[in-house]
Amino acid sequence: DAKTTQPTSMDCAEGRAANLPCNHSTISGNEYVYWYRQIHSQGPQYIIHGLKNNETNEMASLIITEDRKSSTLILPHATLRDTAVYYCIVSSPGNQFYFGTGTSLTVIP
Amino acid sequence: GAVVSQHPSWVICKSGTSVKIECRSLDFQATTMFWYRQFPKQSLMLMATSNEGSKATYEQGVEKDKFLINHASLTLSTLTVTSAHPEDSSFYICSATGQVDQPQHFGDGTRLSIL
Image (cartoon, rainbow over all chains, first blue to last red; front, side):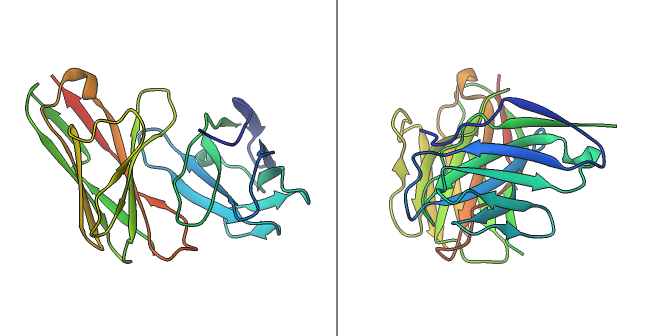
């Protein structure tokens, strides 16, 4: 079963930052937080992952709370192409992913 | 890098036939591959985990005799849906991972329609 909870849906104005929260209160010490997104009828696209430190790449930033019980994915300047379902997953490296329901993000012009 | 290719992307078959779906890692060696199924407006559901050279491990409720998985090389895994019926119609997605600290990378999925 999925170990994460996310809001069902969110809206964000184009050009603004999109902040997507994820709760994972039962995360284990060796489990990472992974973020993926899925655009309709495609496979999930990897965005970013982290263990306990904040991470940033060309797509997004990942902020993990000190107790690791929650995290936030930040898309700094949302575009219409960022409209997708975003999944937060916790798992040990190399292990199975159990997807939750994700957050459907709609970027509004 | 880390490209996973899935073939075919779309297939329509008559009820009772068997369908094979291929999943290839194009630029890395995939020690582990995963197969998922996704119904409309639902999330991905893990079906099985496949390690190269070993028998696949199936999730509870997934019929291993119906969904045959072969992972004969470090770059190829196949899922065969045997004696497919309309209720097997779904979006099938594979993912692959190589080194233990590498995240899973997903294929673009195969849409299977059984008439």
